[in-house]
Length: 230
Image (cartoon, rainbow, N blue to C red; front, side):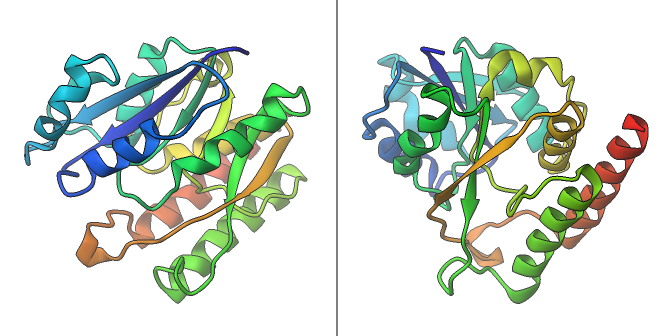
């Protein structure tokens, strides 16, 4: 695997998009990297802030309109990607792109096919008590259903061969795509390599979009995949 595509789904992230891309482009990646921004029907003009990066070829921009959800934006990015490996980076500054080289290492060295960036929840990283407990419950539920051991399935930083992403035939349009991806990977016998990463959770006032209902939906998505597997 010698090339990588980083898909960045974007919806109304004018305040953070440019900073997120500047931080990403400053990282010395171990393989040639395509940065693919998928604008999911933004109405705040956020892509205007990166027009120079697009014109210079540093970033590739795909626009879908109207807004269709994070899952649909990711699926568009997966279909458009040209790299042999694929990963995700949100535009909200919660994740540090400097973690990518360490995340890619087990795959590039042949120790794993799939790697997840596992978050540790200190005070700076906890959006709320229930946010942390919900994430831990989802990881435990997935581990129980598929006889695995994972500590973080809702992490944004996931790396796998692009062909694998496409073979999974992901269907979710919203945040449920995170649970669907993990469930389908585990159902086909993939062993997920977890790498510690840094994380800074933003709050509702900063634009955090995920709701508690998304966690409930994720529980059901995982159970449904497990039952279908049986």
